[in-house]
Image (tube, rainbow, N blue to C red):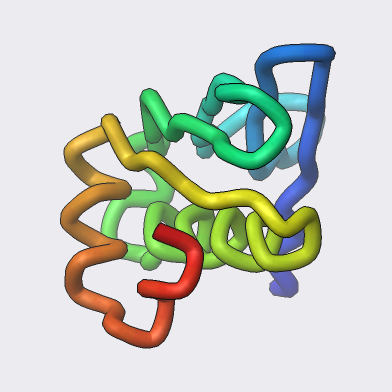
Length: 94
């Protein structure tokens, strides 16, 4: 099964999420801090997806989003912060 992460954005907030049959099973939320930064404030993964690496996939998607949009990530969410710290190759977005 291919995992398709979607994004939803408003003027000053947004989320990256995975849903299956209309149910959001994983989500990472962020706030925009000006035009050049996003603050990741929460990551949540459903129990049904625990152990699948979905949380890391959300962080990876956030990194791709940051690179594409030329923004930096401020990870307030403990999970995102720890995951970003483990992947030196993503330091360019911090």
